[in-house]
Length: 182
Image 1 (spheres, helix red, strand yellow):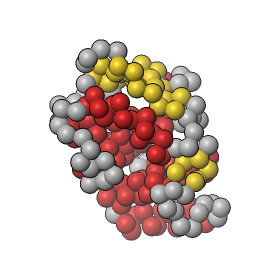
Image 2: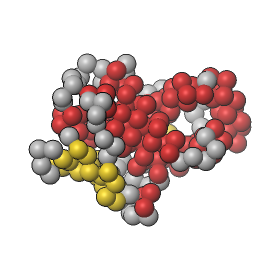
Image 3: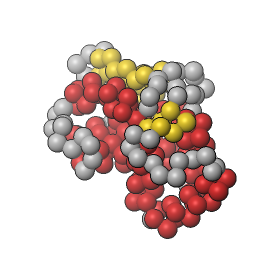
Image 4: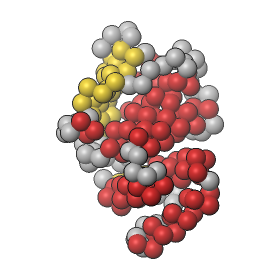
């Protein structure tokens, strides 16, 4: 499995926005010294081996966020907000279209990862279940992806709630399953 460069570029943008470019560059320079096999230039379509990408994420959270694993979720929320207001999804969804966003989430997932699967199943007019399957059991996938969805939903409706975990890597489960209120 590979992570597409767009995920790296999104993380870079969120860290720079959060902590500043000096902090990002200082961290990345040190990390790259220990990981010379990381691509020197990353484009949105660059394929980054998942293990290498997750090592970067772990180091980033440890070094820049004092090990606060909720940083994955916060970056996801910020990325979802950015995507719908200034990024690749700008103009595609209007307020009140939470259901459309949830239905489109599997396509968004495929834009970031070349393996694994995200499914969205509507259980009622007001609820959906979002599952992530076939990815390494790492909190990055759970928190960043569901955080992205929360950020997108809050962009469409500021009253949107944080998706509720039914199963997750964060709880020691082998799969990820969240309930989303529409």
